[in-house]
Amino acid sequence: MPPQRRRPAARERCPASVPLVAAAHPPQVGAPQSCDLAIVGGGIVGLALAREMIRRNPRASVCVLEREAELGAHQSSHNSGVLHAGIYYTPGSLKAQLCVEGARELYRYCEARGIAYERCGKLIVASTSAELPGLRELQRRGAANGVQGLRWIDSVEIEALEPHARGVAALHSPTTGIVDFSAVTRAYADDVLEMGGTVSRGCAVSDARLVGRALRLTHTRGSTEARHVIFCAGAWADRLAVAAGADRSPRIIPVRGAYLRLAPERRHLVRSLIYPVPDPSLPFLGVHLSRDIHGEVLIGPTALIAAARDAYGLRRVRGRDLLDTLLWPGTWRMLARTWRTAATELRHAARPSSLLRVAARYVPELEDAQARPAFAGIRAQALGRDGRLIDDFVVSSTPRALHVRNAPSPAATSSLALARHVADEAERAFGLD
Image 1 (cartoon, helix red, strand yellow):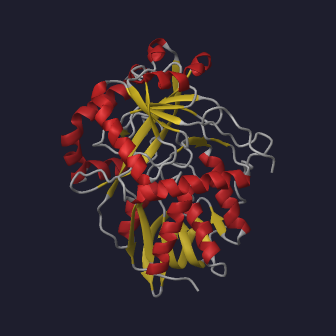
Image 2 (cartoon, rainbow, N blue to C red):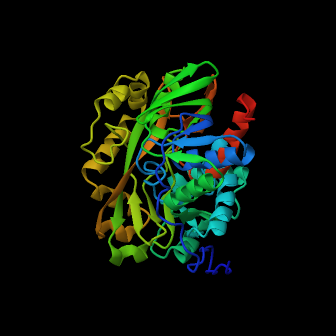
Image 3 (cartoon, helix red, strand yellow):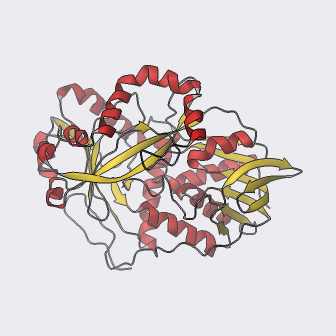
């Protein structure tokens, strides 16, 4: 492999001469009638876990059952492509541990597989002195989590790194990067197939029942009996956990995040990634500016409770999804605390130009810039009965099964480390021989 090209400051790219992973999906195959281990969910976490389990148990039959016609059709592909460094997360949490480990591993994986990435760096900007305590807390967390190279900079240094950004201080994270997570997902799928696993698309699992010493999974292509099952079902994780005998809490609440795309003639306003100091009471990072691996500059996202678990368009409503959200007591307890934030997000959804005004607090020239709608993603956010937004990864168990009940960002960044963690849990709960 040719050596990497080096750029000034903290920018580092995968060499352009290395081909990208092929965009084709694996050939369609039927779902097996039986297997040793079934992974439900063909997103980035499910496929990372499948390759990890096959690596540990090469003689076991492992199949991945994905509900959609394409792999990684939801959170794995509808995101800004930021490869996080691990700054925000509570020290000692799974997110803190697995993000730092996972980012390091994912950079190495992308290098080995020729997947385009860039260590472009990131600024978290305090636009007023009132935000400085929050910025100090992020600095403390980042240091506790082992984030490399994180440093406090002043307004002069902000302009040196991002000439159009303004703030009283910022944190600079040189190890934060960008990558195409869809390409990573496809590469994981290729690994699974090369290692002897099976990937079946168009297999929406609707039920899971114990049958002797196996779990019978009912899906749109029939049924599969597996000795053990690991559910990585994203927005549908709670339903399948309940079907397998788990508690109804936490409930998945779909949160729609929409992005704008900055007009090409104004992309020069953003060199890398520019983030605000987030609200510490919410597991969201606020409206930020991010340059993706293709050179586009994204502004967003919004954070609006959606009427469907796949509501990429605002008009999509699914009755069951909406009722699940409205009838969950945690929804109303959460809204009672966060109604001001909810009102702001409604305004952002109704008037996307308001996102520009928010971003202009730290890049003032955006005030009169042009942007157009880009895409929307759905965050599968776990919400407790008490109205608490669950901020860490959550893995639970039922007989013959493990359930990844909450895996929002930075799950893609953490995917290799998270897969290893879940595989360790699986070995403790059940083994494959």
